[in-house]
Image (cartoon, rainbow, N blue to C red):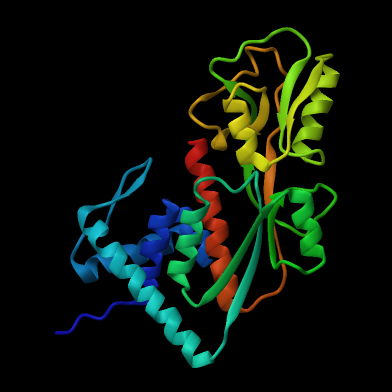
Length: 286
């Protein structure tokens, strides 16, 4: 008797694996957590293999799951390719991602999106939140993933980012003013940091400005100064010096996604993108 795979169960398995969570996969699929778990269980029964090892704290691929995952991705990609060829459509997605959001995981996140929908033409611009939001309003990009602007209500919440003051292990205070490393003059995090330092009466001076978050990370690692940065992006050589140097706590920052109307297939890819970012954030906060 021939065994037939239900592609919706394959999709549930791949998403659960990528998001490392039944809950996150359910959010992307618009289903309940129980429904996604049931789909994965049905796929396991069809294949007569256990694909996921489930514990109260984590979901991990079994050896059979590791072997099946690339084949599952191939099946989903073939489905999207077939649908695209039937529809004769060329879809594009112009992404703008804040450099405070884009970390070392970004290439892997984009690779996941392409594996689900290889026919989607994705272009990415990484930059400052205020610049990307302006480009979104001018319709130069389709999606902006940026820090939340409190005066706007048209965004989807993605995750909350914790910020701290980071410096090199070897850095020592040399008295006032404190050398400050920030990503650019107009950065909202810079403005918040300066305001908090002023409230505490802490003198500071600009030691390094510009180049984005990656450059700020290098500058802090070189011992040039103290940088207010997301904890999930801090390199291994950097330590949180907030308490050590008596610096005020930095607020938690909400990261959000602005998007305009798009077709159903592209919207599905966007849900996967949002879920992938949420999964990365949860992993680093755990």
